[in-house]
Image 1 (cartoon, rainbow, N blue to C red):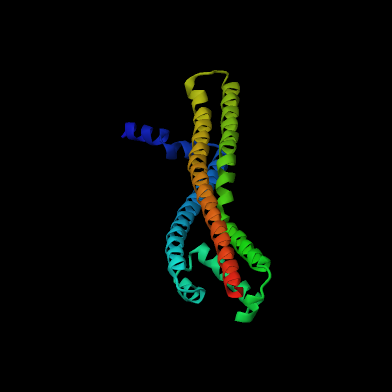
Image 2: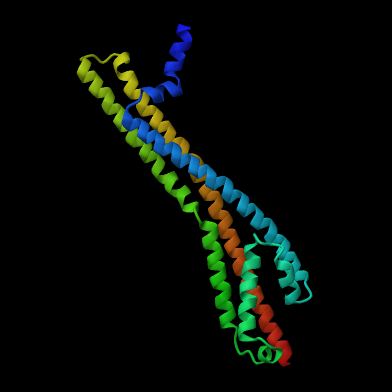
Length: 231
């Protein structure tokens, strides 16, 4: 029983329980930031995976559709596709500037449509980037928050030495343990955050390029349609 009690006291729970109020506050901040980061990771991973899948399905329908109206009718099946959202915005603006066949034939430029596509793409990218910045903040700040707890624990160790007048292990161990546990917690919160941030940033850049490419293709289709009708 005494061995188990000793192990419990030197375990993680025991170290946290025996740490100072400042160290507990630091650990609470790091734990809260880590939990929030993991919630963002799972949510963002799910939404980006769904958007990637639906983008591919929508683009397949777009390039194999008979006309834009048919594509528009089928686009509602892909609510998570940001490319489909860009398409709807571009088509909506096109019908504003050219609501009839005659208006489409007399359309001199497609600048309004292009701006609508760019605006929609920017909105979709902003939506994808929502909360991702918190991962970067945690990745950069968590080690320093943990370092603050480290410095505080070492200060406590030196204070214990000064108060007791002895530098044996029993005196310095609590402060050093407190310092190391906050350091480990800070690193533990930062590593998954920075890995997830880099992954999501790459995925979002890829989607932004995909939306930009689709916008250019959409403009080309409209311009070819106008030229064909005039000819």
